[in-house]
Amino acid sequence: MAALSLAAGLFARRFAHTTSDFMVAARAVSPRINAAAISGEYLSAASFLGIAGLVMQYGYDVLWYPVGYAAGYLLLLLFIAGPLRRFGAYTIPDFAEGRFDSPRFRRLAVGLVLVIGFFYALPQVEAAGITVETASGLPYWVGVVVVSGVVIANVTAGGMRGITLVQSLQFAVKVFAISLPAFLLLLHFGGPATPFGSAGLARLPQKTTYQVTAGELWQLPAATELRVSQPTTVTWQRGGLVRAPGAVSAEVAAPPSRPQARIRGRRLAISGRALLPKGTVIWQGAAAVTLAAGTAAPYASSTPVSTNTAWMGPFGPLAGGSGHSLLFTYSLIMAILLGTIGLPHILVRFYTNPDARASRRTALVVLVMLGAFYIWPPVYGALGRALDPSLYGSNLTDSVVLVLPSLLGGWLGQLLLAVVSAGAFAAFTSTLSGLLVSLAGALGHDVYGRWLRPEAGPVARRRAFQLAALLSGVVAAGLGLMVGQFNISVLVGWAFAIAASSFFPLLVLGIWWPRLTTAGAALGVALGGSLATLAIVTTMVATVAPSLELFLARESALAVLLSQPAIVTVPVAFLAMVGVSWLRPGPPAGVAAKMVQLHAPELLGLRRDYIPE
Image (cartoon, rainbow, N blue to C red; front, side, top):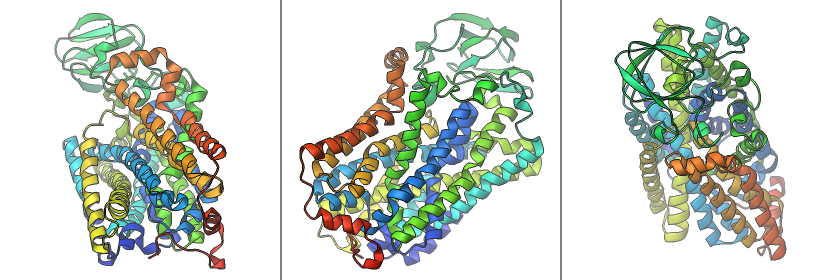
């Protein structure tokens, strides 16, 4: 897959010569090819690996992720795609400056593009490490370095024109790679209906051995008989963990590197065969721990233990564990649904179509393509709980898509593992490619070409784009080495929350409300984006700060709002924009002409690209 991606990128380099080629593929991409490229770019590691892992871990509540990811394109089709293309810019900061005649507003928009882009890049890099580690046994960092290198080479070689061909091919690879193994698994095992006929706990289908290390956390949902390879001790407490419900420990999947700060219990010495009561344990030494078939699967993370009934119902361990089920669910839906409209690396794709009609057709075809893909990740999550609940004990639910094919055994299992590994590779490389184009556009075009060196020629601008892509890729890879403990889909969800709180209000009001002023738009974008970012960073800090985590455990509503801030930050952004625009009227000069440009059909001949070819 790496060789195919590089070959396609090098082939496309032959056609990438101008700044327009690098930034918007010369605005000449057909709706079907662009829709395949958008789908390939949008179906990230969170879609290919993360959703299946979250479904296995939390169950029914996670279905809002694929629903929101796809449904966001309906809103984009109805309200954004056509007008955005008619404006004819290269980047979202271009739109911010052009719509409001404010170079300073461009700088604010560039900052948010960088924040959203790097937040979204982190889970792609993390998924690269997980995939290479699971498929080949190589260290996590090798996958991060190899994938980042391939993507950087593609983007610097061909820019947007180069990655369009790569991403459209990778979409086909992803659909094939995720559907074929799932179909064969369902044929072989008969689906999850039989194992879920019981309302009880997930149980190990066969004897399972775990390699535990000192400090590792287990939750035992029932009294558990086990055998250890050597004498060791555990710290045991009755019941679950003290944690920030549904926010810090459970949803973010914090590592058990500092468990002593969250557990107070008795020390038990065990050797040979032992029976541990129901509760939570911290292993104080390394050992090989063997559990018999039929044993209730232990949970190695701080995910709430759930029965099959709770797992298959609404407000289960994800939303229900928060203590504020409706608040959590509505905020999650708002972030994912509205965040799609604010993702810079997706929005720039609609500038690559020839006209607004092609942009709307592209959005419609994307809806169909995403629907064909999102059927399958929940299937993997359900099959994972039914067929391999040992992943709960090793805290590897994010790798369920990569693990399940091997259950078929023999050459078929190995072949399907290679297929899903290729699909996973396509997932994070295509998304990371789009992100690097977006980040490089922000740095090379908006910062260098429009701010630092506006007099620079096409060759200098192209080189600035390539250098920015290289630097962005290196930074993303470095940060990716530091976030292995966070859940992939949670990281992506945070990027959506920031986008929903900043660019979504800007685009909706900037396109459809002529009275929006520069001051109102800038304040709303800054307030919504900064509040969402601050909330998310606070949640991340809490995973390594026990005192903050315990505080959030007591203030559960605050913990939910910090981990899922969109339900507050999106209305705040809208209110700031509308309020300031009403209190201090004075929309930019020429706003009527700009609204005509955004909304007049192309047949009238009134369109004028903000950045001409």
